[in-house]
Image 1 (tube, rainbow, N blue to C red):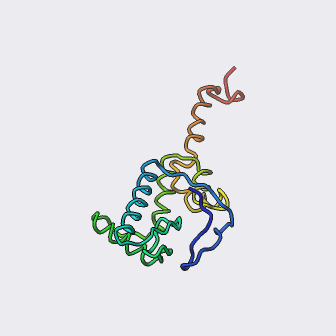
Image 2 (cartoon, rainbow, N blue to C red):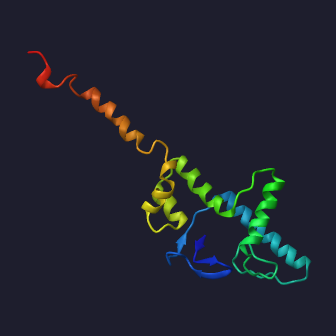
Image 3 (tube, rainbow, N blue to C red):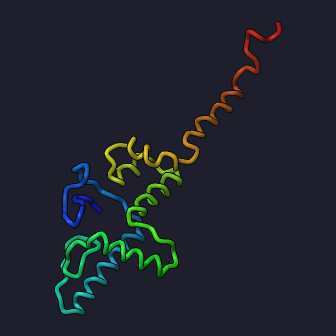
Length: 158
């Protein structure tokens, strides 16, 4: 999927960094979105209205961008039905980044997928979620120890 535009306050604008980017999605998500589009087409047909393919995943029945409050309400209903605690839509973005970093995924790719202007921005916000930060580098010090002399050469008895 390609991100070309952003929606802020119900208006389409350029992305914050004014760059287009391709984002990856799982096969399951791709199937789910295709099924959603099919359902939307069937619903329009059932109502005797043309299906307006605006390219938006979440659009009003008239094909317009859904306002944030409508999206938040829809998410809230879904979470209630699933008996999950309430979260905001933006929390899903944080969950995505956190889960990927906890799994050890490349911070550069996570940064790109989020549309951050730099890896340092991603690191500043999510760096504390990187497991052990640089523990593997610290652990390498023990490997060096096995190859090193047991005492400093100047302190060894002659």
